[in-house]
Length: 224
Image: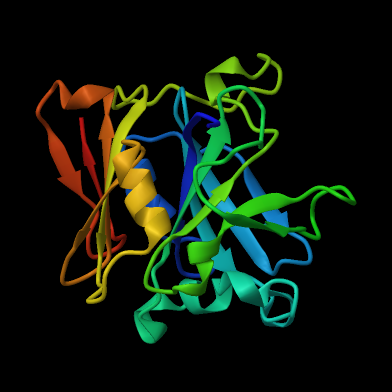
């Protein structure tokens, strides 16, 4: 079975991600941003040594509702406060650059902003809008391993190095999908039912015993 590790997490936010101010005020240095041409989304990102957090929003309603993009339910996710869809996505990368023998079933999504023929494997739980999108980033690598001239900023005034755990609270009454159960069994993420959607990110094994909650601006908290 192909071994996976966390690549990044996205959180759907308001247009232009005003929520990024809260992360900057907390002490994070913002990295790159991008418009996903043809997908109808844009982002702002905050990088750490092994993974990153992406703030994602809808910037083109025609593109995001197209037949190509609609199976991801990104429009519903980007408007989650009104639709009750899950605002999270979790991306993994293979530790050996192989997409063979993945631990869960996937389908191929061909993003318009990637080179022709390039695709992202999307977990088949994507049909459930009350669960996060689970997908693979085939050619990604840890931010710290990127060449110095291309490396995003990794040092922050609050000393956070590596994401070591993610705990996801889902406003879901039914049983979790098989894909979510597999992620839990592999120790890649923890999930529980809650009254609302929330993502807790642990850094550096939480050795300092500190926490910070970004609610109500973001359904996000840190433990480090």
